Length: 308
Length: 308
Image (cartoon, rainbow over all chains, first blue to last red; front, side, top):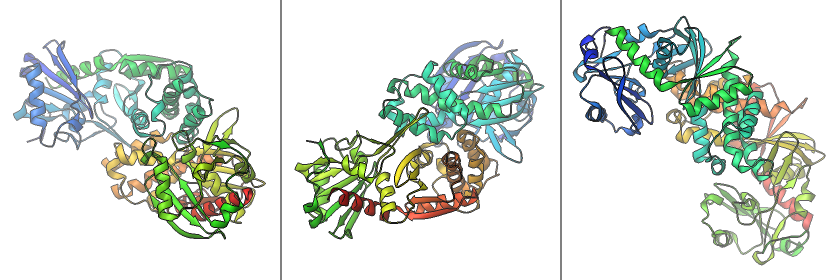
């Protein structure tokens, strides 16, 4: 069913009638109807991420998107192209640009759909992969939100630090900050204190400073419990401190390769980017926030333009 | 019901008839019947840790222990004395010795039972607590398994690094290694690869080396997934590598305060102490393994002797 081809059904014809773009993640999906000018005319978000779709259920899950947004061609990115998604779209090795993505789309002509591949990074020390963020990265460049040479931090379940050079992703590193915070909040000995809202106040900043110091996170985490039990720490601040701790450790790793970068671009959902921006301020690094949704739509438009 | 008294119902009379000792943890409990010479004549282990006992269910849970091991006085240690246990036994601040523990037992005369308090540590930088391991630490000294001045690593759900001076616990640090590994194995994006047995072979040692390097654990964890997906790492080795990674980070933090310690004593369950001993070898530190169960029984005996 799947074919790897450069120019195919996703063509000018498709673009002239409009398109549905889906950012299809592990636990959520966001779908947008774009008109021929690239403007979003309708959208929705639900919890039918790939883990919410039963085995063999992707044709129905896709049909549901069309029912809600119209019978249009689909361009999808994210975990939908993983080995647990609909059709696997093999990773494209770094360095890679938007042209590479467009050439390596997985076309599903019978479905009037295509899947954007993710990126991989390999060097002698480590291996890394991303799916979905690459569309936002190239979209941000295309839309002038990010310079072609930049360090971008993309917080989420798996935060990505991406080094952009000449408009391409040169290398990147994934940090499991969001997932670890969720695991701790849902099922750990700290759960009872981690339900509160995380705001970038002093408990958060204190956590960031501790995380930047670089002792093992596992060594610091238990002190949250001990601090509350021994009344050294207020339980109301535990969630923010813990979040700060993980984000501080995240920055320490992400900035380790960064050299003399003037500014860090933090891209993603505003509720996360403001935490990372506050943490970067605590680390003495200038940061600029960019809305990930806008970048995603720009990225989809830019891919369509490449293949049109 | 609870009273804090130094010398009470747990007396010579009790000791002459024998005693039941319970190491009552969060998820498990181990109960032992000791005769008047301190020898174990019967024992059992089950999953009725404090989280397995319903609200108000401790009298029944205790009665069940007596049904199985005899109608004897009970001396209990561990999470049974926490704020989520039966009766809270306030932490005893470090430095503390076995005499301090004996003086601060929580006696429940009507129940013919007593609860051993845990230890706390506070300095200007951090707070820490332990419950249960203190009995093993003092027992190991009493039994000649550990010198009165030693660095002891006690792996488990929450690994404890304890500095012993003159037979007292001078300071300690908790590292959430076991709990984090369990969280990752049970509910993370790495779960599918973490079910395998962890043996101290090369994947484990490679993880230890990576953990000792000191980048954030959250930065290394995702590379396990990427390494398998990109065929850089064999899935069969992922559990051992991940365990090694967490233990390597654990050692880095635990040894940071250790100075020129000749030897690290690793005390606990043999399946864990051998992993930590292998990791310490990788870190160039001599290690000696001590059986935690034997130390626990020696510790209980030593407390009973203090109050007899």
